[in-house]
Amino acid sequence: MHADKPLTQRALTPEEHTHSQFDTIDVLTISDLHCSYGNTKVVSSANISLNSGEIGCLLGPSGCGKTTILRAIAGFQGIDQGDIKVDGHLIANSLKQSPPEKRNVGMVFQDYALFPHLTVLENVMFGLNKKQASSEQRALDMLETVQLEQLANRYPHELSGGQQQRIALARALAPKPKLILLDEPFSNLDTELRRTLSLEVRDILKAQNTSAILVTHDQEEAFTVADKIGIMMKGQIQQWGTPYDLYHEPLNRDIANFVGKGSFLPASIESTHSITCELGQASSAQALLHPIGAEVDVLVRPEDIISDKDSSLIAKITEKHFLGASCYYELELPSKSQVSTVLSSHLNFEMGDHIGIRFSADHLITFDKKADGIQR
Ligand code: ADP
Image (cartoon, rainbow, N blue to C red; front, top):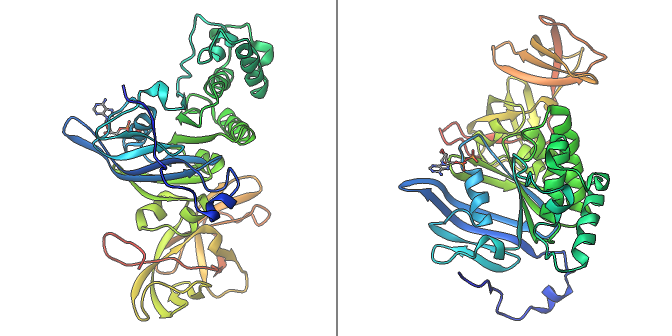
């Protein structure tokens, strides 16, 4: 057993003193984390930094190493290299591991993991000191927070999946952890409940000012809940940033492909701020990273394509999905390249229609044509 050691040993600078309590404190810092099972490396060089009160998310396809990172933070998984700090305290490196119960971290599992023989109230009190008179009140307060105080005396099998997950959240929050870890918490629920509960959980975490790391393979869930998202692929966090950054400033072609819809069209860099491609000329508020004259691929998102009946650029509708307020269309350009767009459902074009379109991007992301496809 290892005692937690405070890591910050220097005095705070005057600037640091002027920051508010929740301003810049990293509640979780993961530096150069490597994990393996036997000889198989499953996580390499992972870096994460989460401010107090922020919700972070690890998003990626199944098997990319998300749960392994979560288990390493919780203390259920050893690490080969790097370190993990919670609230400035070193809790794990390759030589020492604080036991899970000493990490000040709460966990919510995919299958809820409530104790079937305990009532709802007893489940929520589980991590609290039963001898303290205030514990029952704290548990009742947490039940009120998740709006299930009326179910205090029920048993888990008498609850719906959504109710069980809210109880699991109340149980994790009760001991006031610095960080909550949520492992695919909504994946056993149906689509509608997933959506409402994920928003509810975000509101509860924000109201409690509790930081959290969520693991999911569901992009919509990640974008709904998280302030920061790490896109994971093959054991590596490819980019850690806000949902806006990941969508609008993807660092490489894989991230651009994984996050949201979009296509790549061949383009030439015309000036420091403009390109030409099959869609015409387009300029970017930000300077482009490629040199003038370079042949690149430009990322075209659905919102970059607008309908314009007067345009000479004509595209054919090859796919249509009615979304209610809007319709998603896939369009074939004269070169046979595909782009997509989302237009008001009032327009209601049909499959096979030829429509006038215009390229209307206010910033451009260009990738080189090499296999790694990173921005230059
Ligand atoms: P994710 O959460 O992204 O689905 P995991 O972290 O669970 O991914 O798994 C990452 C990789 O490690 C996968 O290839 C998985 O098969 C492997 N793995 C997970 N747990 C174990 C284990 N206990 N022993 C051996 N390999 C494992």
